[in-house]
Amino acid sequence: MFDSIALAAVCDELTDKILHGRVQEIVQLDARSFGFEIYAQHARQYLFVTADAQDARVHLVAQKLRGSGEAPAAFLLLLRKYTEGAFVDAVAQLPHERVLKIQFDHAAEGVSTLVVETIGKYSNLILVDAGGSVIDALTRVPATINRARVVLPRHLYVAPPPQAKLAPDQINASDLARVLAQNRCAPLWQVLVKSIAGVSPLFAREVAFRVAARADAPSDASRAQDILAVLAQLSRASSETPRSWRGWQPTVAYEDNEPAAFAPYALTQFAEVHSFDSISAAIEAFYGAPDAYAAAKEPLRAALMDARDKLARKRDALAQSLPDAAEIERLKTSGEMILAYASQIEGGQEMLAAETEHGKLEIPLNPRLSAVENAQKYFQEYHRAKDAAARVPALLAAASVEVEYAEQMLNDLDLAENRAELDAATHAARAAGLIVTKTRAKAAPSEPRVFTSRDGFTILVGKNARQNEDITFRRAKPDDLWLHARNVAGAHIVIVRAGREASESAVREAAALAARYSQARGESRVEVIVAPRRNVHRARGGKTGMVTVRESRTVVVTR
Image (cartoon, rainbow, N blue to C red; front, top):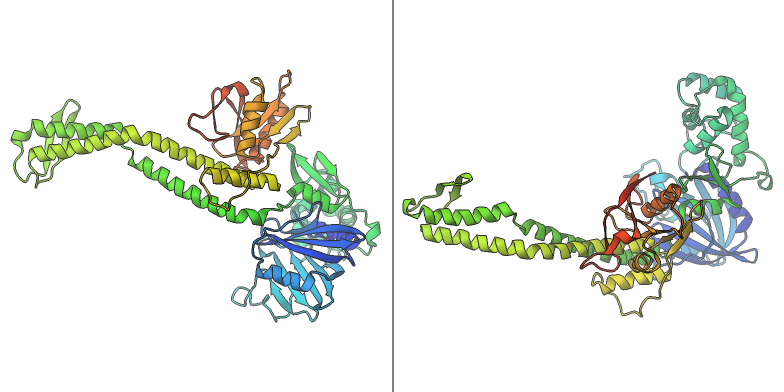
């Protein structure tokens, strides 16, 4: 998604907004993400950089980024040494590549360059000195991993090898027609991705749609000139056009009310597209704001997962210790049959074949024990199993509740977007005995999210256990609709009917929110329970926000 064209637009925006600015602060959000506060043109700009393998990118964000307060990692210390207090001298992109270079001039340390490589699983952040040598990298790459491109301190920085493809700003109509003719059976977008440097699938599909009104249109050599014109129009950064004339049109496309794609050009291949003032705003709308508290969450998440795993092992052990009714009856019958056949059991006998009303039963015997002692042994096992059958189900149910609540706490932690919500998740987990932290004042109350459906229904979203309890049992009326992702921890969702019949489109939008704010948020298919609020009841013996539901229907959310 974050392709070379998007990076070109980001490069232009950074040049406009942070060039000659001064780096005032650097924080680390998680293991591979950093935030820079840069004062430029009488305003603070917040630069987000991540080398995450799934979502590597660089762009400005609207809100100040905060670190965890944990001991700084080695690469953060290095960035602070060479770039904090430095001025941004230059911002440049490697042609047609997802590699950005930000050059800094520091009064004490001199000139250095942060190389941001947003190339999927090979994404990296590399700090390079004025002579082109690597100072250090977020991920070091020795010769044993990549002999052709070593990324280690005191080695010269070598850029990723150029793609063996046609350069988009040098290709002509005859070259393109020849490539299209050689691949005439393939979809046009696949040919463009395979043949032209810097062309991503999204970009290629947009070209195909603009040329042939179909994103999956086949290759057609006769349209080479039209394709070139669209390529030039969309990939403005590949031309010699001055930045101020390029006219980027940042957009985000939506499908089923969810962001589906972003680009610095109009995405005409989608039915629903929203425009943004900057590519950074579009990217932030697509990914959501970077989690300013990601680093602060890590130790809490680790502690919660450890507690959850211990509880799950306890639950599983209880489940394994629960005998079934047939086993209990077998033990009782075995004792009775041994006594009934006692006169026929010989010393040292190891097996008794007894006839019961249900057929023949083979009963193992301890040859060192008498018939009466064998019977007593079976009766003792019978009483232990019977006691377990009476006692363990309640313990198992309680253990299952504990595991379910730990899962809810993990989901609450993931969804926390501000200090109040983070404190609420921490306080609830500590109160439940899942984690041990330093004593802290009771968490300030946080408010649930409020959305409005396209046809005007208010949708309430509880982002933690307390909010779930609040919107379900205090704010919702009996005839409001209640939704929740099936069989996973997640948010309670309420559609406020306000005297109207909830539309199916509002239900679909609310179901999408239930999937998004649940532990199944990454799944391609999520089942969501829909029920009148009157059918939702507090779970007996459950914790805050835990419920039982009767007479519900299911809506499937697909992505």
